[in-house]
Image (cartoon, rainbow, N blue to C red):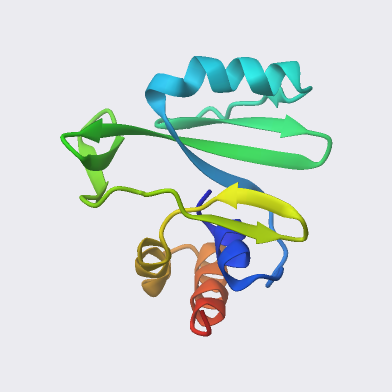
Length: 138
């Protein structure tokens, strides 16, 4: 898990409203993930502009999957034009709990790094600023 919910899992409380759940998954595991989600009642609801991931919906929940690949220990996002290295460090096995739910989350420093510079779009920038402030106490 990464994004706003990962912030909440690291902080130990819900810090803001969320539009979706962001999960980073290994592309090699996608068929198993897809089968599990469909079996659990999720619907595949991709967006036209999905490039390196896809999305699923269940009731009012939206799950955004971002596909990752391993390049000799580096974690990369395989954009068609060029790969982007997310990190050269392993993600590890960090798990956190929130309201009785356990989830694997990206490492705290990687999450902080991703929230330091707000994105350009206003709505996303507001979220990034709030997330960065919430992480200051962890």
